[in-house]
Amino acid sequence: MALTKVTSGVRTLGTGEVATANMATDPTNASNLASGAVPVGQLTTIPGANVTGTIPLAALGNAPATDTSVIENNIALLAFQVAANASLAKFGMVDSAVDTFTDTSGIDTGNSTNATPNGGVIGGGGLAANTALLIHPTGSNSATSFTSDDTTGHTMTGGNAVEISTSQVKFSPNSVVHSGNSSQTLSAPHSSDFVLGSGDFTIELWMRPHNMSSGFSAGSTNVLVSHGTSNAAADFNWYYAWYTGDEFVFKYSDGSTITEVFSGGTTNPTNNTYQHVAVVRNGSDMKFYKDGVQIGTTKTVSFTTASTSKALNIMPDFDWDTNWVGYIDELRISKEARWTGSSFSVPTEEYDATAAADYTIVSNTHTAEDTATTADLVFLLETVGTVTLGTDIKAYVSRNGNANYSAALTLVDEGDWGTNKKIIVARGIDISSLAGTTAMRYKITSHNQSESKQCKVHGVSLGWS
Image (cartoon, rainbow, N blue to C red; front, side, top):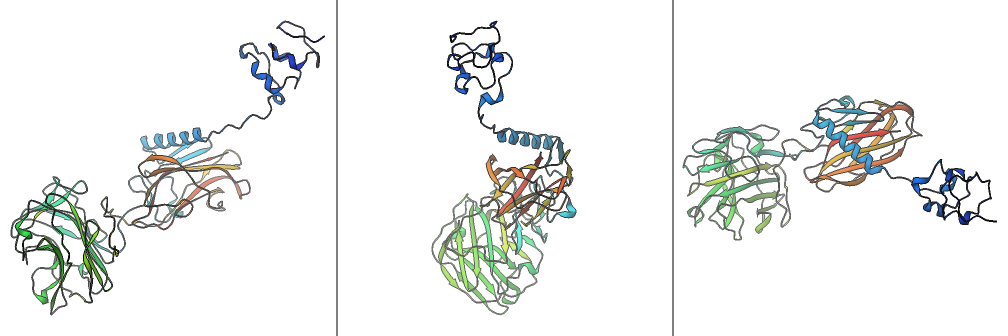
């Protein structure tokens, strides 16, 4: 006769003595059940508080696997924070290691290329090739002399109410203010960097005129930047100016003749507002821009500028009708045509002072306690432009020191940790077939670095099991 209720204290039943269909009503003593006697579906009714002993594993069926990746990510990010807060370049844990790149420790510089840490990042930078001059002035308020932020280190000297200002800036912290004195100047000694010759070039800056009106009436020329200090053909190279308030002009000398190229079109200055202005030569084409939009039509040019030995001047005091009053910021001269279309996106931040370059990061060796067969990699990546994982940034792991690396890992974007900052992971990397056993390393390489595409690595966590 089948029992319909079993309570604690009942004798131990043998296999088959209790019908499994009836166990759902009150199976309070699971420890006395024979292996496999209760269907998995009925185990949900066992009151957890009354269960004694253990339930055979076979009776549980196929339990779903636990996904611990979120926990692992948080552990890695916590390790990054601990290392950074403690000013540690390396932070070692059991079966994992973190590098935060606060100094050269943890990076094998002998096996790395262009991988010197700078300000907590590896790589990056925004100074494009062929930059002849870059001014986003650094220094104290009212300073009249400073070094330009480029690879050549041109020294700019002001004076006569031309000085660094912190009151009106396009990009923090400084700009250069011109107060309207007739003898004002901001200059740098002559350099071959400023000789444009017959090649391509781009001259650009942000300018903020201050309550100017008469300087933009008919016949007036407000020179923005020039190479040369007088308007004589033999002593003059070129200048770029805002002319009459309606158009721009690029004026040049070939050593004997002075020629003017006007933008045409109509544009008016906007007082007390920064605007981006540029002139670009691309082969035989010359274009003028304001705030990224072409002014007038493309001009056809063919010339070679003279090679004067005179200084470079910003807002100089010759060949004008009105003193310039206002601010300039982020002036750049390039021996390259930066923009060639009818429009472009104007810069949204200042150009960095170090060139972007491809690099390789190779960690020191971290010794595993036992033969590692699986690895996990997490790194923090800051990007500029559109970066493709596996193409512009690649990663590898090794258990044989700086040799026998895996194939490039499949990298996954697992979310943001800040603006343009990503958490990049590669989970469950099978390294059982790699040479070696316990000498753990990672390698990260960047590719296609440029002014518009940058991969800045802020930290790497390597784990193994």
